[in-house]
Amino acid sequence: MKDSIILRPLNHSDIAEHANLLHNAFNSWYWKHGWSKDYFNCRPDEVSIFYQIYNDLTPGHSIAAFDKTNGQMMGACFYHPREHHVSLGIMSVHPDYSGRGIGRQLVNYILDFTEKNDFKSCRLVSSAINMNSLSLYTRAGFIPRAMYHDMVINVSTQGLNAPSVQGEERVRKAAPNDIAQMGELEMEVSGIKREIDYRYAIENPRGVLHASVYENDQKNIDGFMISVKHLALNMLGPCVARNEDAAIALIRKEIERFRGTWVLFSIAMENRKMVEQMYAWKAINVETHLKNVWGKFPGFHGISMPSFLPETG
Image (cartoon, rainbow, N blue to C red):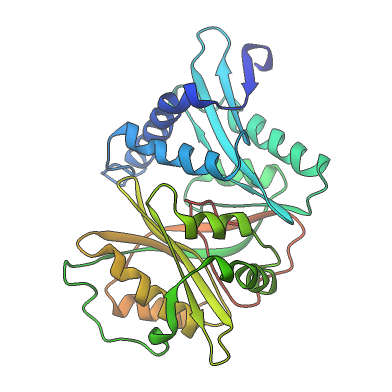
C-alpha cells in the first residue's frame, strides 16, 4: 500500500480538494452514524477556512496522502509545533480510502516530527464515539486524559436570555500586550503555551476570530477566551482560566457574539459548575470528545476548553 501513496505537504493548489475532503469525510461519517444531518452545513468551498487559518499559523506544517495512480487526495492533516508541544489538527480520510491505513501513516509522520524535534508531547482532541479514530490514536500511543461534553446553545437575535453572571464585568477584549500573560496562564493551567495563536486571534486577519480576557482586582489575567464565527464553524475556545467562575464569565460575555445563530463548545465533564450553568442556559449535548496526549502530560490545574479552529493544545 505504501508504494501506491505519495506523502507530501499541502500547498495552495490543494485548497479546493482539501476543503472537499473535509466536507465529504465528516458529513459522510456523521450521516452513517445517526446524526441525520450534515456536520458541515455549508458549501464545500467554505470549509477552506480550516486550511487558511491552519496554514496562516504554521505555513507548510501539513501532511497529505495522494493516490499515486490517479492523484486523488486520500487523507490529510495539519500539525502545529508550539513552544513545548505539537498540536495535531483535524484528521480526515476520504471515505473511498477508509480502512487502508492512511490515517496511521499521517499520524506516524507527525509523531516522527515530534520526536525528531525533541517536543515533549503531541496533543489532540478526538471524537469519543468514533471507534476507528479512538483506535488509531491509542494504537499510536496516545492516552485519553480528559472527557468533554460537546454542547450547543442556540442564541436568539436578542442574545442569551439570562442574567449577567459574577465577574462578567471583568471581561474585556484582549490586546497585544496581554499575550505574555496569556502564555504564562496557559503554562500554569495546562503545561503548554502558544503565543502565536493568541496573537493571531487578537490580530484576526481573516475576520472570523475574537479574543477576550478576564482581569482580576490586580489587573492580572485569570482567564482568556478565543472564539471563531464562520459558516463552517461557530465555536467558543480555546479558553483557559484559573477557575470555573472566570470561565463562566468569559463564556457569558463571548456568547453574545453569536446572536441569531448557534455556538458549539466543549467543557470537561469534571467541571460540574460550568456544565450545570450551560444546562441552565438551555445548552444541549451533541457529542463527546477526548483530550489525547502522546508523551508527557502534567495534568490540568484549572479550566481548559478545547477548540478545533484554531486547533487546541
